[in-house]
Length: 223
Image (cartoon, rainbow, N blue to C red; front, top):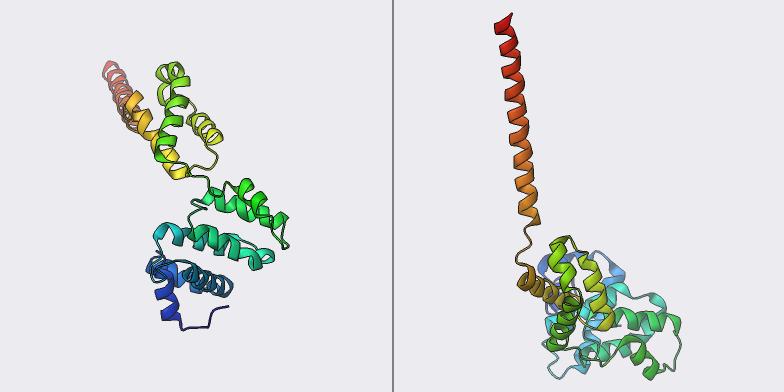
């Protein structure tokens, strides 16, 4: 465990991996996470060539490891920290899979080959891979998409793409899916349509009210 430092220095340490000021101070409220994150960062610094600078992507994964892991595998974090720093664990999906593997195999020696296979460690899914698979999935559903537009179940498309690219970054996959759908279908204007429908309903209600009032006045006139 790293040598204890005061809270301001801890906040500076947490900010050095990409946490903002508010998140850093909130983290300090949990003593267990604070100690673990501090230790994790210091361990990472011994691995990285430029120990004074941890990229935001690596920092996010170090934070996730410290907040989503379980105490029974803290002693095995050194393996995951090394994979993160070497960018062999590149996203949340791989990290969670690695944590799950260690939770079911919590004793050393660790079968690193099995760990790597179970968590896709070292698998590099490129932007081009994501674009290609998203294009394939959309093409296979193109006729239904053109017919149904944004009423089509978009989760079906995302799930199929994730099935084919299990270790792809989920955020990048979703963004690419959105971009290619806009290219095919145009902007998703369902929200504006809903506003128009609401406006029409208001107008319709107003018209009905006017008609009702006119009818009452007409009856009064006849009487």
